[in-house]
Length: 136
Image (cartoon, rainbow, N blue to C red):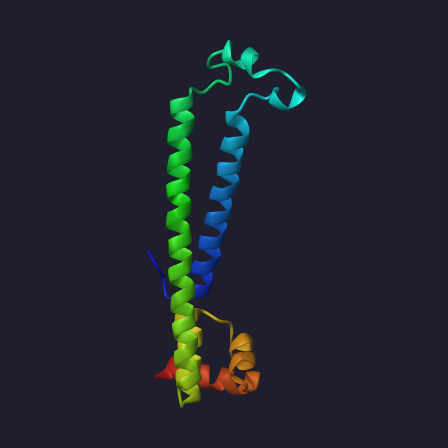
């Protein structure tokens, strides 16, 4: 569910993607035999079937689920970035400062100081425009 605060949505999506990528790395790290890097032969591990505590099917299923979730998160992040780019394009062509402030404040979720920097107005002017928008 998407809110009107795209910057927060982007941060949440990035955190989720990071968490899923760490989970995938942990699954891959724990899926293999721990002694493989210590000079132990593959034949030794073939004779210890299921010694890692999880059967291969379970690990594969979990890995597939995580990969699916990662792809979904990447698509969500891409959508958010595309929406943000569209909003910034609208803001650039907008004639009115109040329209720019409204979009950046209400839709993007930018703080007033960042809005002032983005559109080239003083913080006080942006604060005044924001107060006028709240009244209407």
